[in-house]
Length: 133
Image (tube, rainbow, N blue to C red; front, side, top):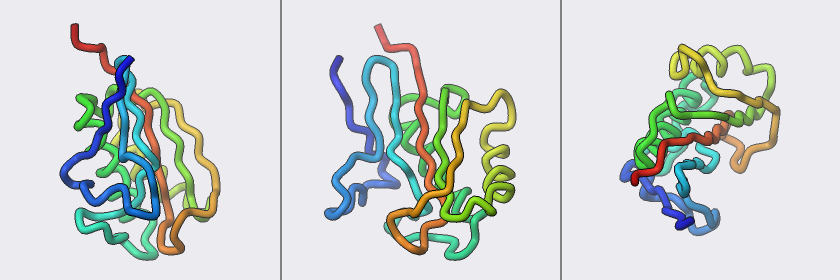
């Protein structure tokens, strides 16, 4: 099964030289996003100190990778959410529900130390789309 690297134009600064990864990859109908954070198109963390704003930007980045692979949020099977502070769960959850309002994917949410101190939320997704014949 050949693998395709997914790098949306809005995330073309990824990966940073110190972070060797791809924003996403697909193969066999599966689409995997890397853990996305609240980086804007310039590679700067947005919404410093604001979990809601960071969750919105993070999900925007996840959706961008999904679209690059031919998927939508309706194709997402599973998400993993990493919060710098689990007490921010309700705020993140409210924003997550706006993107996945009906039949949301399976999800795991844990507290974790993130790569940079200004990062408050990181989200990765797995989706499936029927392979083209």
